[in-house]
Image (cartoon, helix red, strand yellow):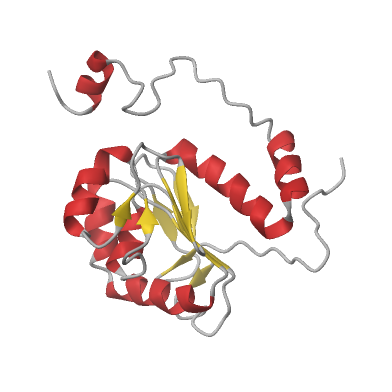
Length: 197
């Protein structure tokens, strides 16, 4: 199989940044990733695509009060060609004052909280998978991030590359239940997910 992601004049270096390099970052479900570089090590580097992940309540509280993270995001967003978030990563972009007056989305269960906290951000109606506004792109829940990443890959490297990636990862979702956002979920499922009895 040929390396379809090799695009002329496009170098790809994906780095997970954090307060310190080579430090484990644990997700809410226990999965661990290691950072490649610290915020300080990347301070003078150009970042073409800045992608902010999301998480639950603890993540939002920690990330939106992390001055160093917010400064890193603000600093690199200025020169980045694309600034993206998925799920509640939009809270970080909004807290950094990057989404003022822009159209955006976040995970559907956080939309009301997000709008109250950041009233100058234009929340797009209808639970979109992702929203582009200029160089900013925000996504909904986890699976939205796949759609968002494929679209972004196509915008960066061309539709042909986006299509090839979609094919190689065999991305043709066929959700078994079809209740993937509140507009199509049955009431009992919605009630259970949102804490109703």
